Image (cartoon, rainbow, N blue to C red; front, side, top):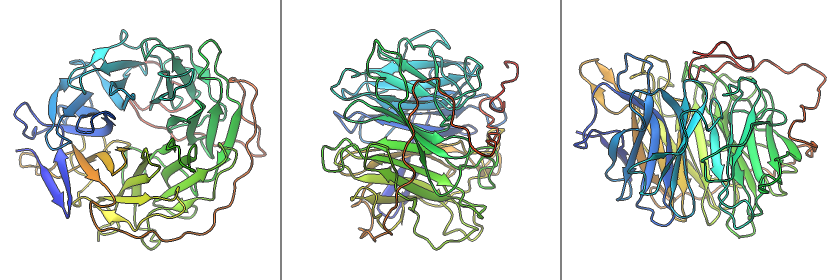
Length: 479
């Protein structure tokens, strides 16, 4: 049977199921990204890393779809049989067309498109011709400006072209062809992209030591080579970590950037959220910062998880989304209720005032052991995702609720849960200290600009073993 896991008023439904809708014994599934049809919220698709056997590190591009709001899911199969794929990213445009960007073992990519709600996918180019690189993220311009429909992606430095720098690419034809990669100033790695209502592109990530928000004003102009005209350091209150005790073979979280396009007074606010390790702490907190001036300055970091500071507790895989009405929804894994400090629950918090205050945190899942079901690598992936609408958020996450009698341990599976301010206890936001601005942005003239020198050398970036474990920035021979 498939797993249905209720917790209070929240219900998590298993996504990676067999043709009869039952659990697949012996597999593993993680790194799940969700897309929702904005014209019909009952239609959603989730992509994930599908390991058919936990005894092998070989994985493929898994996907599932629902037509009834996430209660039942169908897993028709992988994108391409017997082809190694990793780091799935899905997205949808304003018409409900879904896209799926998939990383190959060569560190090159493919983009897929679905016009039937994720039930089937069309490969838009031959394997690898979408360029890109390790831990790619992409976004779609959904504005009415000149860049409408353009797709933008960035990587983490383990690139298809072997340059070893964090790169940006653009597609002006719906993901079919991708222009030559461009170095992003200050190397904002392991972070996402978004577009404001004026068509300006913003990329958020950690530049190996400091977080940055980088802007391109002309990426939306198809006949111009994109340049980056604003680079702003962002204090997130700590650093991303790789190899932390909670997820030994992976990240404890990535950087997420999203922009308010509500048309309300908060329109074009830029938000960043990440699970970071604060100074002097060995675990992570979910931290948030915002810009109300187009990315010129950012607020002081704000801690979203509201439990007492405890160096033994983890708040990891933090991610968030901005609803069309401007509400912010954040979810993450949390060990606050675990005596062993490792068993995790999915937690939820929301903000209706642009992140100035956040609701009391609410657990929305049962606890699970993140150390079980490892698919020949010691992690439960590197991220989870959420897409919000006016009344709530749709979450794709990995958990180990199913028990495998043959192995005597639980399995990693993908789950869907709906969260909303009314979906559990109705919290009342509490005020936080007044934010202060971080330093004003510095401009760079072209996309090939190099980072501004500092008085001390930049630290070597933490190696990230995806898909094959090569460190950045100098790539070893191809696998």
